[in-house]
Amino acid sequence: MTVATKISEVRQQVKDWKRNGLTVGLVPTMGYLHEGHASLIKTSVEHCDKTVVSVFLNPTQFAPNEDLESYPRDFDNDKKLCEEMGADLVFHPEVSEMYDEDSSTFVEILSDMPKQLCGKTRPIHFRGVCTVVSKLFNIVTPDKAFFGEKDAQQLAIIRKMVKDMSYGIEIIGCPIVRESDGLAKSSRNTYLSDEERKAALCLSKAVNLGKEIIANGEKNAETVISKMKELINNEPLAKIDYVEAVDGVTMNPVKEIKENTLVAMAVYIGKTRLIDNFSVK
Ligand SMILES: Nc1ncnc2c1ncn2[C@@H]1O[C@H](COP(=O)(O)OP(=O)(O)OP(=O)(O)O)[C@@H](O)[C@H]1O
Ligand SMILES: CC(C)(CO)[C@@H](O)C(=O)[O-]
Ligand code: BAL
Figure (cartoon, rainbow, N blue to C red):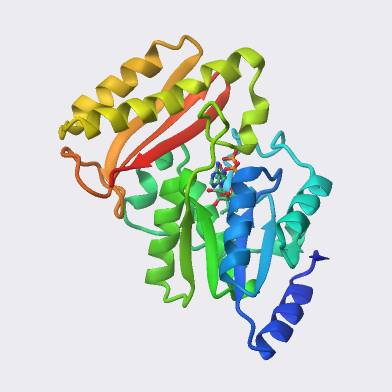
């Protein structure tokens, strides 16, 4: 496995692979890798001849009040996990390699899509995500790219960007990987104290409750959401950012639960903001 820090190294490697007719998969990450990331890498290794993992803590998707500075980092462990999962290349650039000082071009979806759900409290977030993912697509030119369903709005936005911008890249969504007690794996779980870690279970419990109510035939989105909110509000350390039912493609709010409805939430546990969701099958 090779570690590249320069865009030119990645381009040269990918050129060599493509000359030999090999397909390339890309797994974009912000590092501090866990089993959620491992499942994306494994899926890429299964689908593609060569797998590139990018480890880049992208500053343009963080607002000044967010956790860019404190975001956990452990590149030695990231390298180890990538190697174990069978990745071929890890791209770990400096910020200055990805963004020139005078860099001023952004990729932004102008519909309401990035303004819904997480966009309400993170208004510049998806502009930063689209910009960096677009750059990674231009650098790696993958055949397929792999994203987790945990970040469901991000996945929908990337699909839309790929369609709108005619990127010939197949986007593959990978299921949420959870801890044995149900908590969705996330690099930000490391911020939680023991007490908060227990409290954080209210997210996956709300997911399970929502699924159960819908399986029992409830079609009214407001009814489902209010029961999920009630469960979360029973946890003293939890503060709801949002719990919403939206169309799984457009991210617009829906009143009636149907196939492909996404039920998504963001909840603060103490100072840590966690997300979780499920899609209606
Ligand atoms: N538990 C998980 N299951 C499946 N995919 C995941 C999981 N956690 C992260 N991913 C995916 O891994 C990719 C990189 O995510 P990222 O590096 O932000 O990790 P994270 O653990 O989600 O971090 P954060 O704590 O910032 O949310 C994204 O496509 C994300 O959806
Ligand atoms: C896709 C991504 C790597 C872009 O920085 C990030 O938003 C993430 O980790 O989900
Ligand atoms: N996984 C989403 C990246 C972020 O929260 O910035």
